[in-house]
Length: 401
Ligand SMILES: *Cc1c(COP(=O)(O)O)cnc(C)c1O
Image (cartoon, rainbow, N blue to C red; front, side, top):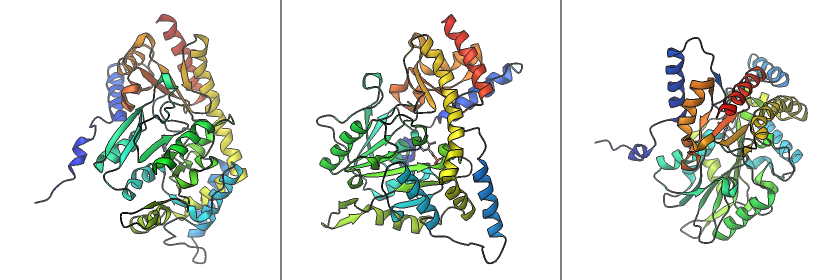
């Protein structure tokens, strides 16, 4: 008789965004005359830039003629895109090589799939609150998860401490949901910890393009020693609005090796290469062609205009809290504003309160972990018009609370 992977039964069944959608649907059904503004889900709203669109069209034209048509491509991604990622990293001050870059359909797949490479008995360290993929993918494979508290006492940047045990360490900086970022010196402490303990850091850099202050690194590979202990995930989703177009990249340095049970040193880069070659057939040529154009200097300059637009929204939202001296995190090097719910409200209660009182939707921190119970996330990815209206309503609400 078939046996199921019963680890799935240990997953939290209540998917955050479906619960939010359900509550909004119920509210709008009961209040059809009200306009709800959504500053909840972390999806972009600006269309792709001109440079990306032109390259997509060019990619399509290549597919229409026998001389330039492409079928299966390399599972690791086309050389031209791997080189474009290398150039992008060099411009950001980190040195990587093309055969350390693996192109994929996004950072979510790679952060989920990477667990294929690691044995079942590792101690997995995950910050609480966290992007749910890290936790759920390890729960599916039945690994033991330890949480490290990320809270206002440590400014949502938890650090290694004496006696900490961790073989696989997840770090997301700038962070979703908290908007907090690690400085270079803080990351150096994690790198040193990983090297001493022979652990691996899985670094999610999905929001690196929002960094504007130089104390925060764009890549963990700006940190000395990281090439011996870290993998980095990133994508064009937040950088270039590719959430629906799908293209990401994972960087695995060739120095990254661990000892197997038989005493042999095994390259993680070679393992991932094998994994991808077996289970993945690459990202569409058209998308890769456009991604390479997007990562060019000119392409990124266009993306920065959109990112600056979102950052302007973030400043407007943060202004509500600045004016009242309410502490918040993010809002500068991040599209997220993470703040403590007024009057110590539970975040789902605050969600309902905001929806009912001012019809503004955010994301309750409780959906990301227990340290999020009394926190709330607003995103800067809305339109300017909606953001301005939401800010007006939030100001009115805070004045009454
Ligand atoms: C949005 C996001 C990603 C990007 O996922 P894609 O699959 O590339 O769209 C990765 N990590 C975090 C934490 C995110 O919020």
